[in-house]
Image (tube, rainbow, N blue to C red; front, side):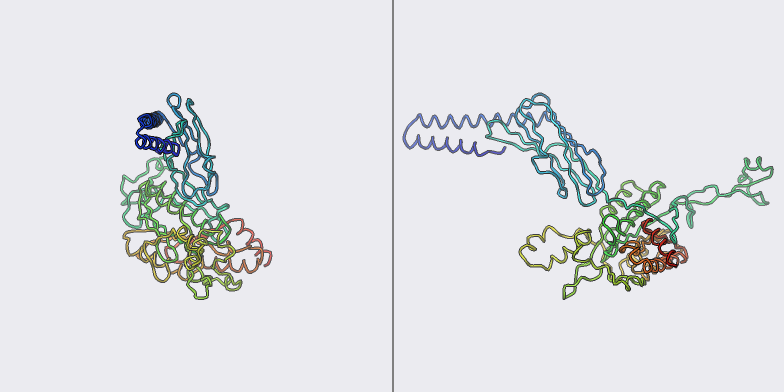
Length: 504
């Protein structure tokens, strides 16, 4: 029970009257002070009864109209309060929001029930700027008796969750050499340890074939003995190795290279779940492995992988140069890509755009760590990095992650790499390493030229860069047991290819 200022004033007045009566030896004053105190205790007892009645009879419902929304889209909560019988005292219900939410002021999300009313409702809207799964805190119910002497605040109501998803890139294309291909994730033959069989094809009966292989329907239809061959099948165990280093934070907001790779990884996870195939996921930042999920076929395991990918942001190395210049994210840029060197583009995050992406915000945090102004010291505790590394790797993090994965897994494993073509030699070596021992690798490669500036600003240079990227993809695709796809926005690729054909 919260004692308000008016109640404290009454208590002080009653005590003062009693003291004055004792000093003046006036029984009437003492009796008056005691009566005032008794009245105050009675009002407190009445307030307690009102609070208990509200706590017992109030039903509060807080329901998200949509439980999954894109980043920066409005989350709407339908709030309804009902009391079994007239409300015994004026009651305020304040809807609380997640810490990361940007919503209306407190008065605009407070529902009021006057004494005697039985029901009230409202809608509360807010936005969340970052992807993730958010729990709506319990509402705060405050009972305020009319005399204003005592109040009580109670946490009440459900705690629903809302998923804020990263915006899906438009016009996603997966292909080879500019031609779109279907990413078929269907039946898959067993290399070792078959787990089942499926019909493959029929052929004419030959001496030595088992009679139980005869396909009698085909024999009757074709008027000759035919047998049906079967191909062994097994669950395909895959591990996604997702690159979210700072170099992937390239492109326009909501349509970055990182966002396109993530959309493919989420689709791959969904397809594996439909087939009940085991899937694991390792995510790789600038300094090593940031998340690790072992292969699983549990629904909760697939959801954990999706949640990890949805909440992921590109990492950024903190600046280390003495003159304050910003180093390139991921160590180096444009390896094997002459277009980067010719245009002078780097993965450095420029100061004038550092607030546009999550990775750039992390870089601002790193710069703030060396700033000793009063403003920086006050702001620093609120900008801690969200990235924690489960394993730090010296050298190239992507190659190191694949090496660790190979050392810690046994049996047939498909390694699925999601990365860009900034460090081509390292990507090639990582793909080769993933296929040792007869295993397979799939590489989803996002050419940086499709995200770096306007492809029509210098179509000849952009086309040359794309040709080099496609040659690298074909090189990967030609490695034993490696399949490589390009990932990017189809409209930009079409414009680049059209411009390249005109200039030829």
